[in-house]
Image (cartoon, rainbow, N blue to C red; front, side, top):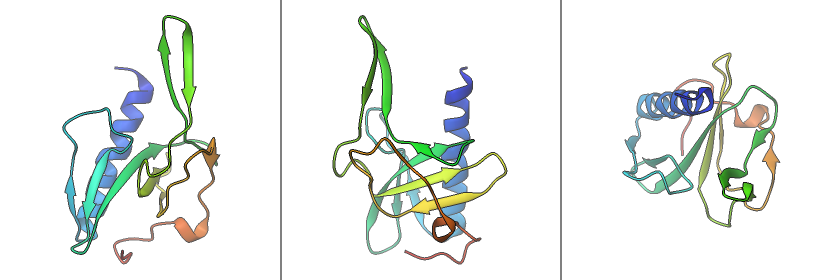
Length: 121
């Protein structure tokens, strides 16, 4: 398995555990074609969550894949997800509650840090 995919799997599984610990219900889409990895239900709304594992300060938001002509890079469209969950190698978790459509990257800051299970929708 590719290391990049493994890191994505770690971020997604950690997000499931964190959101569950926060008291939310979590659903996992059956397909991998969506721009989001999870659906979180806080009892009032459903939120589409994209999960990222990053070792740098910036979170790359582009979708990159290859085809017969080489690599194709696409920016995320408007409304691709509702929340962005970010996991760093040291275990720090961040939750950005907005979609950054059309941007190459975003940098989580202190206000996005998840500080345990006390966070609320």
